[in-house]
Length: 264
DNA sequence: ATCCAGGAATTTT
DNA sequence: AAAATTCATGGA
Picture 1 (cartoon, helix red, strand yellow):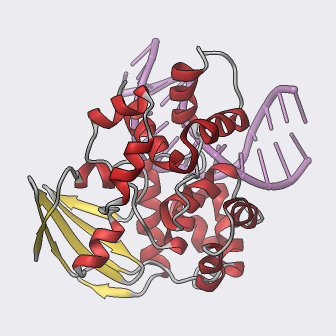
Picture 2 (tube, rainbow, N blue to C red; picture 1 turned 180 degrees about the vertical axis):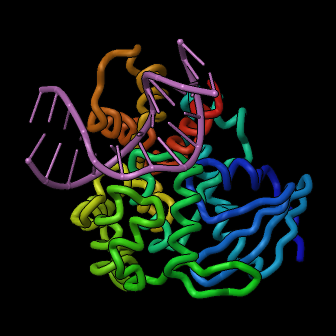
């Protein structure tokens, strides 16, 4: 199957630290979201895909009209610069459970290692899909602390074990109907979830586009661009971003993160 | 307030 | 090739 896309980059979107359950050979990405396995590759303005419907794919990759509206609201010159550098970067709309597990693994880690954790967790707790592929583990299925540790999750294993026993798809879905602050507080109540991870889950899987996850890269970028390299804490950065970028802070964050990480 | 855990990946020496 | 640093959460 194929469809045309405008101003979109599969590579930048998938490799910008939002999503970790992918493999690629050449230019073809093999993705797994829960029990769904699909492939996508891009050739100029043509997207080729198998194993997923067009509407689901476009939603998952964040290819929709919101993007232009959001950009029009972000007049800031630094954001414009980052946007011009990577115009195809989009905010994804992922499965909340998989997103939550991914970002609990993300604490004090890096993209390659998170990908390793995801792969091992799937092989250990996910059901077999054939051809050496495994589904992502369902909520409740990661019920063995030692085996979670064996997935190279380290000190995060106890967080995953706890979350596995308390969170369900329904619990996550209900967050969508709450105000941002309330949904964030609920997530922060989970063992191993603080501001940064809560904001990642809210932004990448639950549609809260005002969320502004602050990690070391964003801290660097924000400090350099808006605080004249003065000392600032994460709360101050979040507050500043909320004032400046309002309900589209998440997109601003994604551009700044990618732009700063790939060498500003 | 400061230090550490788990540890693969990444960067620096 | 080897050594030092990275990274975010919770507990002491």
